Amino acid sequence: MTDLAWISSAISVARPQAMGALLRYFRDLDTAEEAFQDACLRALKNWPQNGPPRDPAAWLIFVGRNSGIDAVRKRAKQAPMPEEDQISDLEDAESDIAERLDGAHYRDDILRLLFICCHPDLPPTQQIAVALRIVSGLTVKQIARAFLVGESAMEQRITRAKARIAEAGVPFETPGAVERSERLAAVAAMVYLIFNEGYSTNSGEAPARAPLCEEAIRLARLLLRLFQTEPEIMGLAALLLLQHARAPARFDADGEIVLLEDQDRGLWSRKMIDEGLALVDKALRHRKPGPYQVQAAIAALHARAEKAEDTDWVEIDLLYGLLEQMQPSPVVTLNRAVAVSKVRGPAEALAMIEPLEQRLSGYFHFFGLKGGLLMQLDRGEEARVAFDRAIALANTAAEAAHIRMHIDRLMKDGAVRGPARTAK
Image (cartoon, rainbow, N blue to C red; front, top):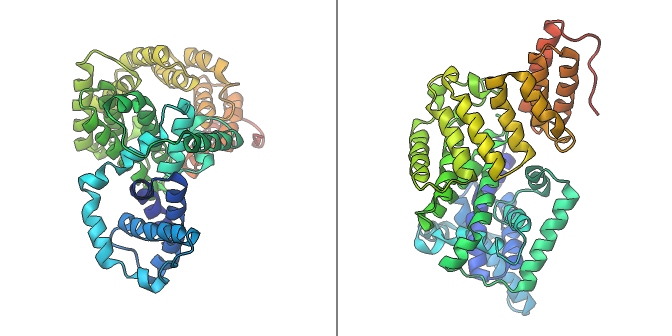
């Protein structure tokens, strides 16, 4: 990994801790963001020359705090920030901050930041979008992809959200118990989307992006500590654990995607699976089902199957049907179609997803599944058109390579004729 790639990854992982601490210190969102950005610029200059700090988060907090103080002083026409060589040797200060990062004072910084972003003055979609941008540092393009909307629309949504936070005079304190409960759904959704951003990657990016999944799991565990009897938070934590447990088996040695049914289940993390299954069972005993619990129950059925052929697809179909009632979405129906294809065949699954094409016209997975179902039905020419469209919409090289494998199989079997058609 190049120095630049490592620095980018380290900053991404450290961002929530650093932003949370800087916000607590300055009690102003714009000042905290500016201080963090300045610290990142100094990291890009300093780390390649002097080597990585022992604790990137502590380094960024210390330098960002100095930068923010300097900005305040400049506005007050006071003394400037010390020279670079005076702050480059941060060993003593960095060690002091690093020792406190796991203490009670810093432990709640990220949650404080989450709850501020998810203030009830903001509509839910704006709460989640601004939290993704500020807490995890995802780009507008990445957030737009998670919401299946255009970049310009998402940019406007984030800008409006930040303006409303400023106008509302949101108190920069950790909310009390009642307020935390009211904001919990938005915070949980934001944590889930952070996980998905880390999970939706290719093998080459996996080492750099995996920390996003780990950060989401850490945040879910923190939420569970605050809301120990809330079954939906148990379900959220279980879902993330069960999904991330499969990470070592998701790509082969060549970096190609390995489908769930073809994965080496011996590579799955048994420790994560056991923790996830225990949380699923505990959540379901509360008899207050919610979307995260249902998704976790689906993941648990996959985790409990020793072999792919042991998977209880009938129960998975039923659970997706319940999820459709709780949280109607074309993506949920698309996922259910996979179970339907296993239980009642590809023709019925194809009939389920065809009405979704207009709404999912920019969604890679729709055309990947459609092509796969058409291929099973020996409709090779139509499958090739769907696969071409999927390649055009692929978010990663691994996704595109996986689809090309299907096209190569169609060509080998003589199911399609003539040159490849490029999807527009």
